Length: 288
Image (tube, rainbow, N blue to C red; front, side, top):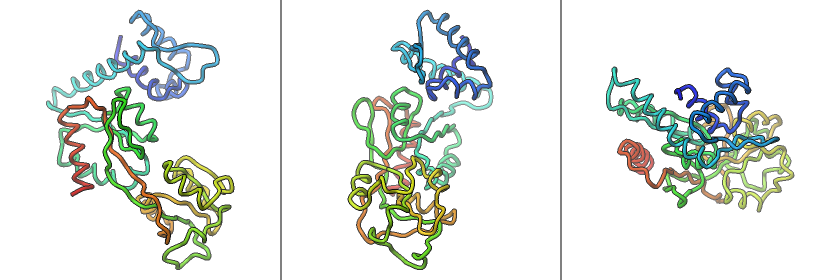
């Protein structure tokens, strides 16, 4: 058993896709399969469920347990490499929605890491449900999500909340306006992204989602489809602020919107002091 094979296994557990992992490590899919089969032979039990036509890699029960061990083994190996240069490094893996990264995380982390030089941080962007699974699998230490995951081994707490706003690349006839009403916005020019169930319920009282111009699952994708004057999208205020920096025009709504709530979540059994340090720093940043 070597670290390179453990890295292959860990990445496959993250991607759940043989082709994607093989490409990332510059291997053929058959070479990756052979390496994993050799690992299984060495361990004496199967790690993956294999069946014809299966699209995603799925772990056996023992595979799930071995993933936790493999992750810790790799962490220990990585920590051991730093002993000659520096002791007492604190390794942290933080999963975060891309919109939150855009809104505040880079500035916060720059300040945090400068004042905590012993911290070594891995930052990954995922959707909220992906972060939940990675936390439960032990592949992340902390997550920033828009759904409160409490119970089933996880704890969540509200980090901040914010209203939704309208963004346009070319305001067209709305240029010069300070605010807009929901009645100003044409369904057929909407670029729709669903953020939370509460947002979707509020949205559907004003517009028909099937009448929207296009439906997307990420803001970077949405930005490609602002093509006509008056094309619009509703996003959280922090996302709107980031888009304003890229030339978009932002309009608050006259009507009250639901609040976009962002949560910090971690495993219920988490008790490492350096994880608590980051939790406390995030809380202090948003709740001074």
